[in-house]
Length: 173
Ligand SMILES: [Zn+2]
Image 1 (cartoon, rainbow, N blue to C red):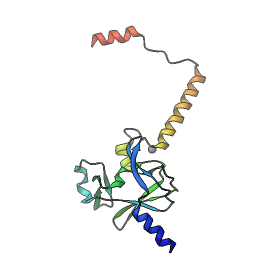
Image 2: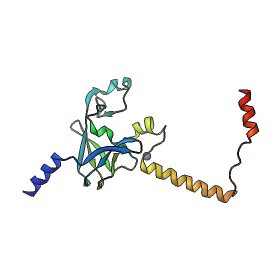
Image 3: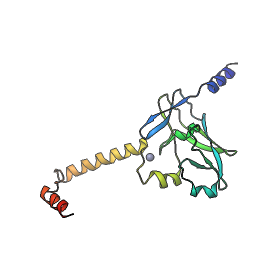
């Protein structure tokens, strides 16, 4: 039966690989992944959620108020998936397992991303500035718009601080 042949293939060959991304490492599709398809499980040691504040790892994934998965082991390939504000995958908790599946059709070469959620974003990503493709594009457009506006307003470049003033301040300190 063709269905059996297809499922065997997907078991033996994973549709992704770890590779270089803008922020370090990421997970990339090497085969087309159809919308709605399960991609990978995020797994690791199960620890009580109430003790997670004392842990020095950013690979925690809270399942519920009782249990959290510490996914910091390198064998947890899903930990290489980066955050995006406009992701092509999502995480879902089913019977205590964290399952990541595609929410868009993903092409070979595309980076696989999901949204880490508000709590993680506010704590770890926002302070440094989000580096996802959607945010980089948003900032680029904002800069271009600001430049266009400044250009219209005065038509001159911002004046530089005089050299003399700078060196005298350095001498005083
Ligand atoms: Zn973002």
